Image (cartoon, rainbow, N blue to C red; front, side):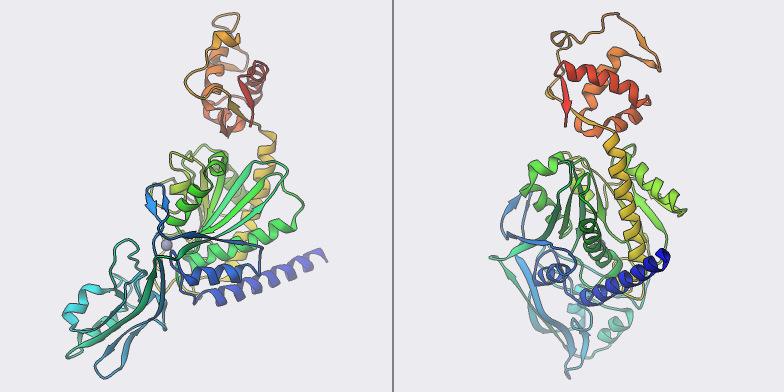
Length: 446
Ligand code: ZN
């Protein structure tokens, strides 16, 4: 009986996801603009996402929020008025952030503004020009040929606009838990009609939020955000700096709906427990997976793991970005991505979060109360009474070594389990040393 209920639930979930994929796929999204607002408004039907606006022109660290870009129409016609390329057929035809154009030009002149995919002749490639004012069209090989054969002039029209009074839009949902320790879940909303990268991510994240809200109060708090990639993540970090600096771990949800293999991108510290937790989920589920080591290229973990924040962020993927042939092309569409794959990825994410909450409640997180420079051990009576004494079960370390390592790693980010893994030493041994440091007021619970 229970199995039938679960199957029905899964069927219903899959059909709901499918419905949102179809509604959201055609919307023209970018790093700013009405398409992002409309997307978040639709996702508000799934979860109570708060929509926040940040003004164009605002400085955010080394960056500036750009003018808001919106587009009404764009096309290329021959002189007889036949449309050869049409934004309304596919919004990927237009380079994102194209400036307005309306002129008659030769193919020779047009050619420098046209992009084709090097390998896939039927695909429209996806291109952007966010920070350099320019315009351009992306076309299939057949369209390129057609344009090149036009005798005489071509009419090029881009009806777009930039608003300096505009804003960048971010979605946010905070789910308070028993502890203030937060897990960050971030996804990006800046891609137009591209299904795996990253319509799958923004939709799955909304359903993940809905599922988390259905459960009893979680142990951790969750900070779930829908941001335009890079500039949105940087804006969010700048606007929530002190909170973001306290976060230890999280996920970037991206490319979770392809037909190919599961994989995961490790966080910057490959020994961090999030990586192990993800591997455990795959193993428990008997799923073969590809491990992608941390790399400076990628998604918004680039911002969250930067020096100021150093959050260990990983991603579970199904057909990871960069890796599948349809990546950043019009063939990354709803024939390639299926709601059932997203529902399955959702289940894995939920299982992972459940495991993380169980694991980390058993492993405390401490902070060194004297983070600047070294602690003066003698002042706190921390020099071991007997010099050179080895601790049982810690044969490679003397007590003094463990005190120094704990002071080095207890930075509000690493749990005792993380430190135990780094030092290759039993967690209970470390805990005893840590308790002494707590008594002396040098360490405290985060
Ligand atoms: Zn992308």
